[in-house]
Length: 144
Image (cartoon, rainbow, N blue to C red):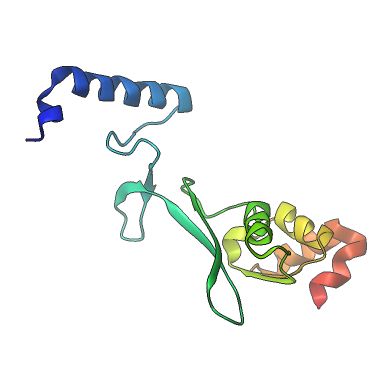
């Protein structure tokens, strides 16, 4: 057994820190070895301490130009931080964004419209119709 795990004070400190995190963030569980990781459900139904990796790839060169780790269990992410990350890496904003349905939200589509970035975010037809109605005057950019 590692020496520090034999130390009762060390173990007690770890437990107190975990308890504090659970109370502050209203969590049901926390990982004692990596308190930043969230317990997430995986495709096989198991729940494990995890992070979700988000990456942006250059279409032409097929290289990663931006990456981020998030600790959200769901796949609903704001797109603005990734666009800012791309801008910081490349020195300019992307002209087109292709993203999965996890990025489909009014806020994300509105942000991309405001930034004049063509977006190809997966979404159901009725969801797109609703967003286009809300976005009104800028809806034509979604049809390109």
